Length: 256
Image (tube, rainbow, N blue to C red; front, side):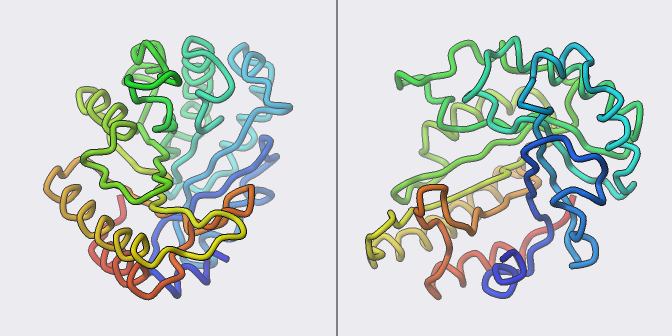
């Protein structure tokens, strides 16, 4: 699937991968073939049984160390429990992040470890606002980067997207590398046909976002979610205009 995306909208450099539980080793994880396929890795995993409290308390340290020691010393990006706002409180996430950062970095300092948030929760004008943003930040000494996953069901530029700006404007003051780990513009809902006007607008906003991000100079990684959603909704760039827009992004990009 990722190789197909690379053909359509590449050249792609980084690949996000997801393991529902802590892998026993990098070689047994969803990222195992990245290097062989010419990609760099950005991995996400969850503690066994989703036990973030136990992870914060050190219950899985032996497994975490074994995994970290197996990770190639190539600057792999990694996180645990991406989009944590769905599942826990800020203090619970910070406790987990701080403990895992300390254990992972001691075992393999080359791993770039940081939090990956969900933009949906960061708009203070909504009922699902995350609340105290400071409660979700582990501190610079426990993060090599800060990242966000951001989606717009209908096309919307990042510069004026209140969910993205809620995260972005807060994190600007932290001084850490800033990444967009998942980015989606316009979803074709299951059973529906694409809206041609929205497809064209999506391509326009990708180009607009690229220009704005280049001007800002703050985002060092930007990854498109070229895949289906869990309900059969389609975020993929299947139309030539959108593919061309993202190919221009890929050609202008640089690995970090």
